[in-house]
Length: 455
Image (tube, rainbow, N blue to C red; front, side, top):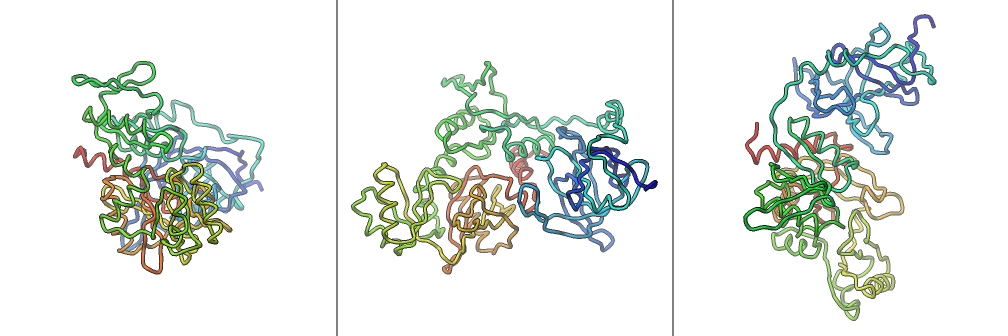
């Protein structure tokens, strides 16, 4: 008991062998393993051993301070995070220093941006060495602001990067936070631009984009449009205005516009030789019977053309149910697609993330029990999956056909081979980064750098 370090629920500690002089940790005896914030995780070989290198921003909400770390890799484990995502994490062994004592602990590497602490100290690392007083905090003291500056801020070099705007609606969204952070980590000046606050001056000689308060937004190098479906018309108009000002848009306004028209995009994909499930489209309820036959009868899928994230998608299990659903949508003057149901997929689909003509990550999404839609927003779960060369080829071909630099391509495995479901021009990052541990936001920034030949 005398030998044990007494700590509160939050404490500062350090990792001497990783070169981290101090970091704030959440002490959590309810968590079995310890976790350290890490981005840009890459494995490599050193002296015939597997190692891992990664970057860490040791201070919360400060993405400019980066420590480059490396350590021997001891394991790779699937861990279920507190948000319910199953993610594969790399595990390292490193020295922890806390309360004047040092010992080796196992740590998993994961992106902890959405968490309040860069470090989580779990019970395995504390066992036999630490006593926790959960009512107290910082029993071992805190570093002064001067000390933190001495540790972290003195060596900050300022590098002139690109000025990049993120055109979106919600600054609190995981994807948007990650993109801003990835850009800053790579030395760029990042700005969140709320679409609703942008307005424009159409002028043949001096076009402009203004921001609420009167700021003129004409000096951006690039914009990353992340436009929610309800903002498609206005969002594409703003993106088009940036393009008129010779600002590089990571996804062009024309590519986003056509990707949002589900029928047009499916026609475009078929014209480019990409296979899709048999699909029917009709205007009049009088053609319902033949429409159902056309796609192979029931069960079948009915999709609202304007739907997203699995909303407006219905599985009709019998012919009678199919007729009811189709006619109900038609009576509301809704445009719908009718699509064959791929039973052998078992509620699973693949999301392939394409950036600049390359598949940078892939995950399998599995529908929640009793559900046929595998979308993460509908309670689906994500896991790592090995994709085939054919699936990779379809994803790249689909993104190219749609002229999208960034695309989330959804593919379903059928007895006929892989079939394309749809192409998303503003794919979410949380599920796929969590499942694959890939820095996809960083890949998006690299695509912009490549356009500017920026090093």
